[in-house]
Length: 431
Ligand code: GLC
Ligand code: MG
Image: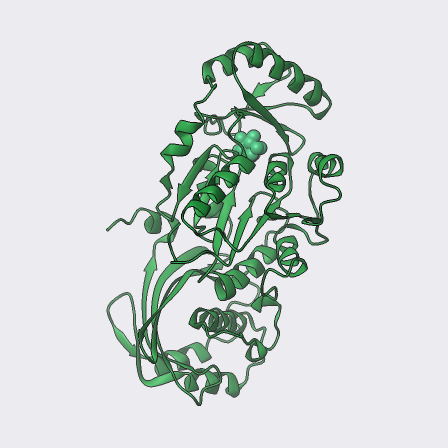
């Protein structure tokens, strides 16, 4: 939460399934477009918040499957669990607050009397038996669309009569969640905004993004902009028509999933909205403000395109790469071996098109830069590479120097790489 001293320029609070993540696109193109935009233009001064119905277990599963970035804050289990940072430190204050007029046992006892409700014990996609979605402040069921509305009314009445104050939410035309009244994605967001305000760090703008019933609450927080992605579910569109139709701060995007989010950034004028992935000639992709992270996103995009055979195979590209790399620069390989950077570029030059047709993608995560000298920057990031063989992560540290006669005004002088053994290694490494 405290990555920078002042308020965030933009805070994006986004749902994952069918909002940030398009499950119908095995190539994850819109998500990769968003990632490149975020890391190149926003990571250094803005906050990314994922707000999902998933429990921590299923959230981590999704993270392994899809090219998701590391968020600053993670809101899980339909706004009943909040964690901070990549170490995912829980907000225990929030969980305590949710105990108010909540008794899980009573919820389970009363709901078991309804045969229409089936407890979420099977993962719908894999049909594996699992209790992961039952959480301390969330009891979740599957129920058919036609039966949902009536059932929600009577269940709410019964639980109120038993002294509880609950919130019942229907999502995706199938999921029914029972939570404490104080919980939910919107309440969790309101709680965060209040905390930021108390610290004098209220984000300058907040954009909420969603597609289904449990996201409706996000759009009822007064100060936020909202985007319902194009593929939004019937129940969310219905909520919007009944409750927020005249609110100009909420749009129904024409883009699906993460493309809808990028569209909303442009619509509301919240900042740059052209992803470097949408730019054919990367040398035209300039920033108003100097940001070394931006140059690295472009560098690795060129690297991806070279391997995929999506740029022309020209000596100029290699010349440019050499021009922005110091003669004396070295790359330190994970084995400890040092190689001159220019030698690495020659090796790279020979790899033209070697990943063609192999679903090769590269994305950067957690890009951060520090000025270490009046004309030198230390940039750290996770470089992810995916191909049809799987994906791997490379912790990378780069030293850049300013140099007037290079196209970007920057020159690579040092690269240090550590390849991690996939997600598990990265996340279990504590020091
Ligand atoms: C996610 C959760 C599920 C919940 C649904 C809707 O799919 O895994 O438990 O019911 O979101 O909120
Ligand atoms: Mg969703």
